[in-house]
Image (cartoon, rainbow, N blue to C red; front, top):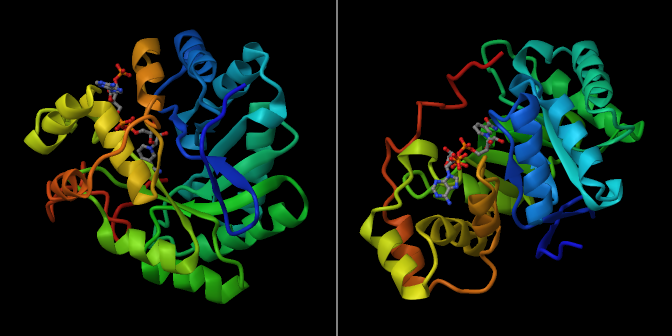
Length: 279
Ligand SMILES: NC(=O)c1ccc[n+]([C@@H]2O[C@H](COP(=O)([O-])OP(=O)(O)OC[C@H]3O[C@@H](n4cnc5c(N)ncnc54)[C@H](OP(=O)(O)O)[C@@H]3O)[C@@H](O)[C@H]2O)c1
């Protein structure tokens, strides 16, 4: 049985301190990679309707033989399903596709401000939680103003806000906003995807000093920031080393040097939640 450190969320549930990103794992190879991540010890799987792999995630869980209540499945409502009724339908369809009777964590994938229906989607998640379809509800890619708006409309604060966060884009401000509201920050593209700063001196030097890989340094940096990273790898060896980040500690100087890699244009593809639309 896996024993990872955990975070306790504002709804009283707990999440493991690191999860597994499943995009773009699909088909038989994808199912095998997700099952291998479970074997490596991951107990939180991050999916989305738009990844078109909820069936693979559900299959990998069943094939792994790990008891259902030891694994948390997280998925997301896409922009095209933001109306209240559409969002509830989206949640029910995700349950069917995953072949589960409950989703552990359900997020709004992007706010899509031009559509301006994310408050409705949030109300649908509140209903789904009350009906027991979903345990924990949250959002992804929400700004401070967008968070305020859904909290004002419902009185319910998201438990999670999953945002782009890596050394080139450390998101000091949004991490602070989330923390002040009692929202757990999750990190997407936690290593910076294909632009990972593995060779940058603060990362490479720390890797040498602690006898770990640059990826482990970056994922440990997340942990010490209080961010829950969701690294993706299709490679079993990398899956195992990426989760093995709890046996060393970065110094304050090492942490600051890595955060110092941040730059204003550090986003991977210009995914500004105020303008980016993803249906
Ligand atoms: N909410 C959102 O809007 C949003 C947006 C983007 C992503 N996400 C989530 O975040 C997850 C992770 O993001 P991501 O896949 O974009 O970025 P990432 O996890 O930072 O990087 C994944 C890439 O790094 C490689 N890699 C993994 N471990 C490595 C290691 N130890 N050494 C060298 N290379 C390594 C992987 O290659 P191999 O697979 O070949 O090992 C893959 O190409 C996604 O899967 C998804 O669940 C959410």
